[in-house]
Length: 153
Image (tube, rainbow, N blue to C red; front, side):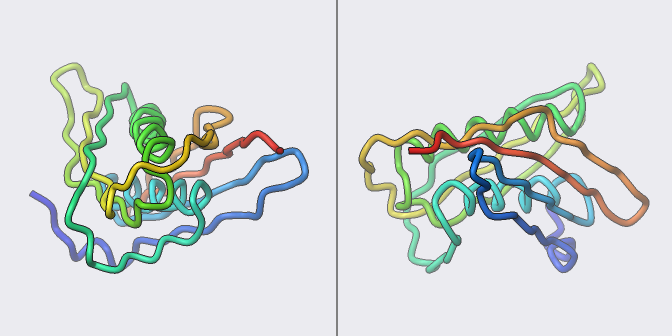
């Protein structure tokens, strides 16, 4: 079950793309679910521009991921989101993480959806995570720091 009260402390910041095609994101949430959601919104912002959810989205595309830890889960979910962005581009306007569970093996499984009009966009190359992100778990928040790379044209 998801408690939306955790959204009050959810935020992200991103840098501009530098001349090497690298940008940095930092996402914060009250727990793993909200930090992952914030991080994926940062990824979407870097990939398609500022996310301005209109609330008119009637369609959604699933995203999911698994990982031995939260960093690997973020990588897997971000790669799934970036694949949807490559297909739908800026017709996506929001991303939500619906749930995160611990697996029997001690890892994590997460799922959610990207929403928007889901009109197929012109083929484009979405940015990619440069390396496994750093995840910091504190008593009252979870912080994700990651670097993305895009091909400069």
